[in-house]
Amino acid sequence: MDFPPTKLDYHVDMFNLQSHSRFLSLFKAQDGRIALILESTVFHPQGGGQPSDTGLIVFSGSDLKFSVQDVRSKDGIVLHYGVFEGSNPESGIDSEKGKEVYLTVDESRRKLNSRLHSAGHLLDMCMQKVGLGHLEPGKGYHFPDGPFVEYKGSVPQEEFQVKQKELEAEANELISKGGKVYAAILPYEEASVLCGGSLPDYISKGSTPRIIKLGDSPGCPCGGTHVSNLSDIISMKMRTKKGMTKVFYTIAS
Image (cartoon, rainbow, N blue to C red; front, side):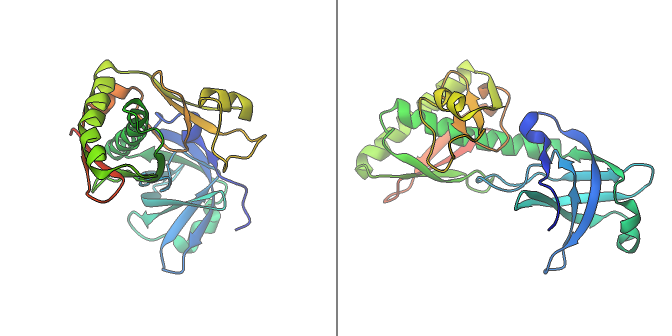
């Protein structure tokens, strides 16, 4: 697709749920789904173990509305999949190119996704605090139907299951105390210092990674959305699965 990378407004302000942009094109996937390509977006695409936002895109100066049901990113371009409300205007959509559009993210879904994603990072912090810091975070799944973080490394299963109670207690203590959460796009060296002196190998030197910091803990690279304060998670419960270095968790409703 011959378009510039989509500007990610949620990277700048992950607590903003409304923005305006310009419509660039309509994309039709092989499966028949249609997607809008915009100059910028406040919608978070699915990725990093976090589900996508949903919401509404309204075309300025008309009654044209597009219900966003799924959001994906491909080669730096964000695709807003969904359906037009009312009659289908696909045949005349070319006349709308360059028009201003208004974006609104579904607030309840964003908040839930952000709480689940933040809870996953909080779990990583607590692994350090209970003496399991040698287990490197691997796959993370922060969807409502069964969030978990799977860790690389080994520890006796009996010990790991005992640590579950310590993890849960540590997490809920941090949540009860609260702590500001913020994101910043930083020069490589500054980001490295904020993350405890090093960054993962997949982040190239000289780049400007986006760093998330939860409370007083060291930061970590992350492109997702998060709560504004650890107390917004409310509480966590955890369980481990026999034979796997994996921690499942739930948050209070």
